[in-house]
Length: 118
Image (cartoon, rainbow, N blue to C red; front, top):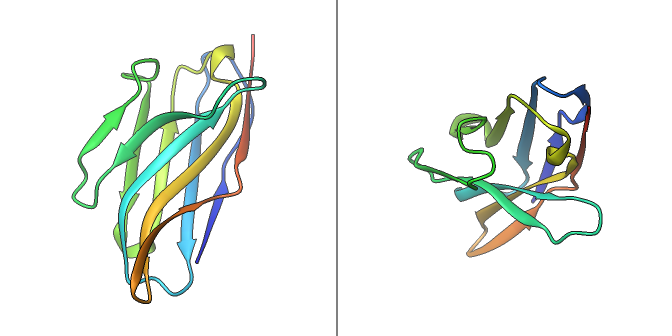
């Protein structure tokens, strides 16, 4: 099983980006999907989560600006990021609890860099 994240880049403050993360491999089912971010010199932080049924939670710092969504048919999770500011600059990682073969475990994507210029 692999998670492949994409969509990062350089954007000016106030701009938007949409991150995508596709799960592939021997997948039976995908439970909770998440986005984390890690800024230079800081610990990795949880940004947003979404359940199989679409229930969402967000870090306070992104509420009202970011939207997490998923397409279960495509094994894909998205993060729509609006009103970006320089403090959002970080590597963004997707994470998912995936049932593969006969067991459940968490998988990580490789990260995608988001840089917001002032």
